Image (cartoon, rainbow, N blue to C red; front, side, top):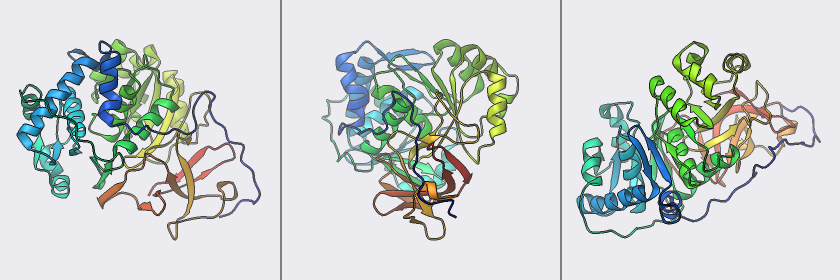
Length: 392
C-alpha cells in the first residue's frame, strides 16, 4: 500500500478561498431568510417560473405557514414533504425548521408510493403535498413564535440508498456555506442546480444562495427548463447531478445555451471519473468542466476549482473538509499520511456531516470522533488532488 515515507505535501489551494469555515450558531431560516428580509427586504430571494419573490415576501409567507402548521398539525410532529412546486417546497421547509419540526424531503420526480419505504422508516404524522402546501401558505392563523432545537439536533431527513440521513442546522449550513465559499459565489451570482430542492444537491444550491443574500433559482431538471433558465438568468454555475453528463456530448438546445452563456459546469461524480469525458466536454462546450464529489450525508467532499485542476482528478478537498485515510480491511483510520500511501479508503472530517443515520445506506457510515467513512477508495497526491479509484 505504501509509496514512500517522509514525503511533505505542497498542497495547492485557490487564492482568495477560505480553507476552513465555521457556520454561525444561527437557525437556517434566520440565516437564509429572516436577516435578509430585515436588511434588504426588496432584494429577490427566489426566481420562479412565474416571477421573482423578494426576501420580505418570502419571510411573510414563511411566518404565515409556520402559524398554519402549528394550528393544523400541532407541535413537535414529523412531517414529510412531497412537493413539485418550488415555492411551496421552500416556504414549508423554512416554516418547519423555524418551528423545530423534523421534516423528510422526498424527491417529487418519484411518486409517493415509491417512497413508501422512506415513510415507513421516518413515520411522519402526515405528508404535505402541493394542495396541502397551498392551504398552509394561504391559511389564516395567529402568529407563532419560533421553537428552536439545539443547532446540532437532527431536523431534516433525506433518503439515500435505502436509508435516511438526518441533518441539523449546523451541518446543513456548514455544507451550504462551503459551496458558496469554495466557488466564490457573491450575492449577484446565481447557481442553477438541475435537481429539485428536495434533493441534497438541490437543497445545498438553495441554501448556498440564500445564506449569502443571493437569489436561488428554482430547482429544474428538464432540459427545456434548464435551457430557458440559462438564457434568462445567466448563472455563474450549472450543477448537474450524476448521470446527466452524457447528453451534453450531443447537440441539444441545452448544449447550445451552455456554449452561449458559458457557466461553470459542475458535474456530480457518480462513478470513477473518466478523464476523456472531461476533455471531450471541455472541447465541445468551451467552458470550465468541474467535477464535484459528495453524498447526502456529507455534502461536497471534494471538487474541481476553475483556477487549476487535473483531468483525471475529482478535485481538491472542499472548504472545511479534511480527508482521512482509512484501512479498507478494518474500516479504521490509518496512522500514516496520504503521501505515504498508494491508495486508502476515503474518510471525511467536517462540520457538514449528518449527525444521524438510519436504515440501509450505500456506505459504511460514521466512525468514532465524527469521522465518516465513505467506503470509496482513492489517493491524495502532493498537491492535494483527490483521485477516486473505486466507489463503495
